[in-house]
Length: 185
Image 1 (cartoon, one colour):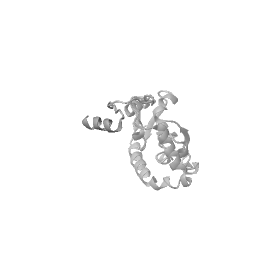
Image 2 (tube, helix red, strand yellow):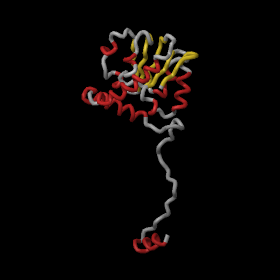
Image 3 (cartoon, helix red, strand yellow):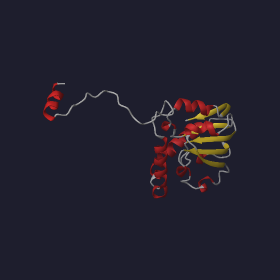
Image 4 (tube, helix red, strand yellow):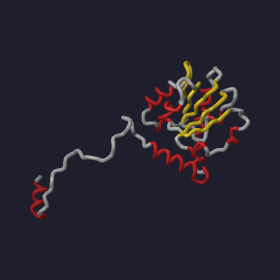
């Protein structure tokens, strides 16, 4: 207080006390849980998948492949015959590439980034005789696109940590699976 009074006397400028709160023009988030900017994440994933024809994003494929292998071991413990499997946040399909007709009839690869989904060609799925569909969908909006009780299993490999409302997303996605179905992360 004393320093501001001396500064005011010497300069002739009136300094006001600044309050702790300030106003902003930024609109409030649409969800109470908005930690990650989903649009920025989509741009980042698109850029990574398209840089050098996807070669730069393949540098870390060893990690994604390892996690997908471990998840697939758990997936093999499911004894029921599955028809529709959703690979949530599939990227280029590290988990989906492991599926064969003994595991599922159809896999729906969903990701925020279309370029990540299209990074690898369909040739990598040939010989598996499994129907593969690739759809660009935000993981948080999946329940608005798919009908309830329409999927046998939902898997997610290294993707759900980018979701803003994880409890809400898991709750909504569990409504998409049939009774006694599975969700593996």
